[in-house]
Length: 79
Image (cartoon, rainbow, N blue to C red; front, side, top):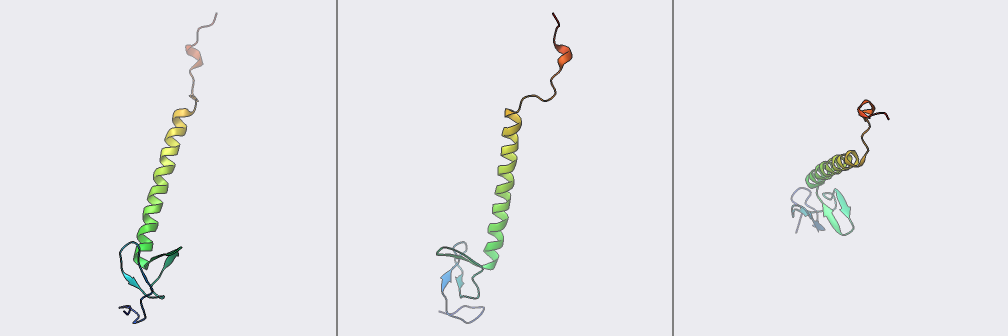
């Protein structure tokens, strides 16, 4: 079979969308997995969103585990 865009032999299939890819169409390979240009962009966006979620979750956990920085000492009774 031939690539529709470049009329070259098909060498891989995009692991995300299933599009048939020639050597020129492959944007990224991860071991034996190949991805087309459009899917690499989508995957990058998903990874970035996931990283932001992880950072926010870590910040929330850190705030919960951090002692109160603004302790009201005036509320303490002196002996």
